[in-house]
Image (cartoon, rainbow, N blue to C red; front, side, top):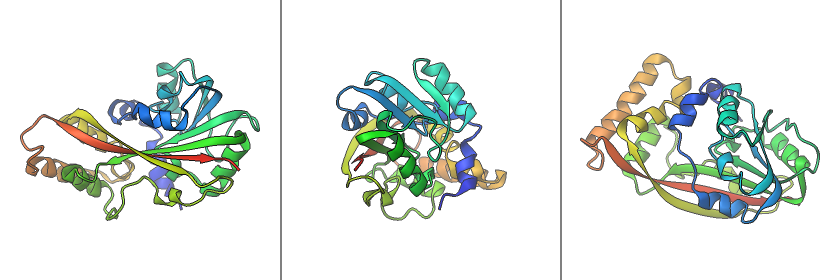
Length: 245
């Protein structure tokens, strides 16, 4: 079940989200859209982090996002994209009008049954659904430790939504690909990134301060980050490619 309190925590942070959240590797978009198609819909598009990789892959790119703050950023960054107010459960496009639907870092916030029905409705026959998540590299101990500050229940498994390994209603079994990549990031930007994560956003002030202190303590203690103002952050992007049936 979706935690509405956490899901709603993103509503007003468009500029900070765009500034501090990581982008996505081009290879992730290549796996979903290897050649140009007429229309792509990026669902739960946020500020357009993944949408930006799609603009050269379709004659028309549509972005659907419920947060006006995020849509405002996306419209400024990508004026060529049709940016629409909407949600996964109520997609404001016509039946069978989209060749590919992408969802980057957002599918776990959707009502799965309703969202899959809506996605299937807007897709052309045999259309493609691509789900994407960035997550910690399992070999990076300090980033994993910080991730557990934000998500204490995370013990095993790193994908954004393990349940996507199962069948989705209306879709064939997915093709799964992992893309490894690295990002150069300052300590300040790394800490600021955590402040755009739902558990930090939804926390009370004292709890948020405790979480930030825990992240900073980890950075102070780990030999790969201690005393450094900038470091290499390895990341992994999971890509699931479904086809409608």
